[in-house]
Image (cartoon, rainbow, N blue to C red; front, side, top):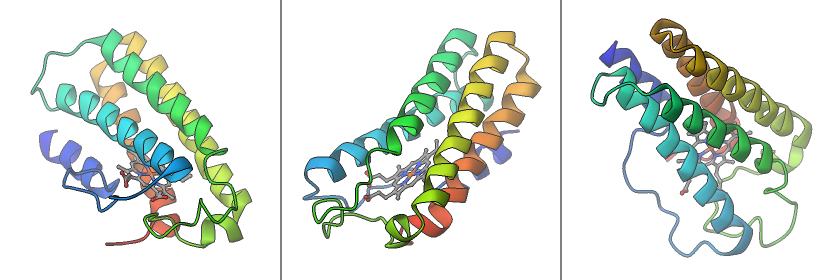
Length: 150
Ligand code: HEC
């Protein structure tokens, strides 16, 4: 279980490490902070599933709600403006070439996170672990084409 959870976090590009986002301003800074908040929320649930922290259904549910809220906000955080395309951003130009696909992937993350919130309330670890992986896949699915590889 522990190895699987670490793999999920790494695949989502959220395995820790410093991000080269120095100098980001305005909307870019805002969306980077939102992404980081989702990363932290994933880590909260990941640590529970790895047994590093005590499982707490309310906390897992709150983390899932945080992800769902930021995922929904995301659709307004990538306007096609010069500020949005500033150099510090790690977004690929595809964000503005394929906005419909981008928004659909954001919606898929919303749906996966809402489901994670629901299964967290039920408190059944296997279901939570499986939905946690689905959320991780939704992060990766977007990063694959829309976030620059380092
Ligand atoms: C619909 C697309 C999309 C989804 C879904 C998505 N991301 Fe991102 N993510 C991006 C883009 C684009 C960037 C680069 C943003 C920028 O630098 O302007 C990014 C950047 C990041 C960063 C780096 C932020 C920084 O400080 O530079 C983290 C961490 C991150 N995402 C975590 C996540 C996590 C965790 C999830 C899932 C819970 C997720 N993302 C889901 C598109 C997405």
